[in-house]
Length: 410
Image (cartoon, rainbow, N blue to C red):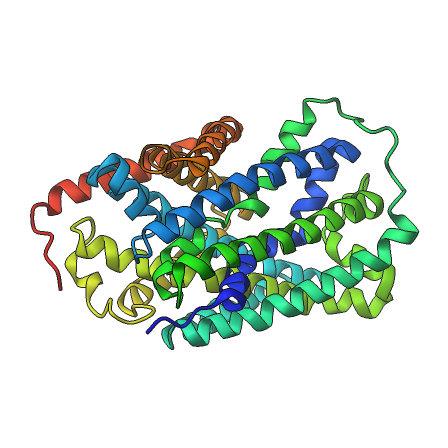
């Protein structure tokens, strides 16, 4: 039974976009380009508008569990759909450990603890979100609604308090590192703008996809635009020129003092769990759909009639735990996981938008074309990390060819 309406759907969208990257990424962008990073924020918000329109239109046209993969299948065929699914699964397999560790390390830094505490917090957050998703999309989306509401209120209040006292600081020189640094800043900020495709996998769970999905996307776009605009200006005023490891805590402490700074540890947990919550649900449904279509072993498709299939989650959990363990052992870093994740998501965007140009018409087709060009430009900045989606795509293609032609419904 479809359970999602505009408010819950909007909460899922906001949770997919406003995640733990907010703890650190805005400050990194300001460090890269100074006050000129505001241009990068504006450019990515401009890109988000046609992205939101395009994916909402695709969701209405195909309110199915396959989501992005289903859109690509219609425009580019089964092989391209399997590759797209492989990219999405790789992105979440790398991104979930990254956000878990970001939240864990943030809590550890603010409490003066070390790596064992960071690891324990990160693992506990993932376990809690996994349990919430095992109970289905209604419990999961309600959980998301609470987290998103708390997050928006806390950050919005912090920004409103900080802007009058510090909003005018650090704006001169405007581009201390040159104008090219704006591109670098935009590449860093991309992490905060990945998510418009996330709710596509849950489109079939909306009560009225044709009405509720576009409204949910519009609601989320409005909330995110206001929130990100305030965060961008406040971050430049408060943290530009610093190299703080907890910049969001610095921002919140402007208005709330030491208590607000300490409370950021709780906010870090909410941010991290919110993002993982959305992507676990979408990933489970996508995995089951890919299995039913022959791109993954058929076992994963069992129980796919549930709002959130359990079998993919039971396999996905140990993968995430293993990646977290590898990073904690010193093999790789969270920043490398973030760059690799972004490269995979950009690849998903490019191929989905290419398909959208082929299957949509009218104004939404134009929006897809604009998004395709802009996403291609962003992809250039992924550089060597583009090797990750290349490898994932080759593996997904080879697996599909090995499993064919046995795709049967379960």
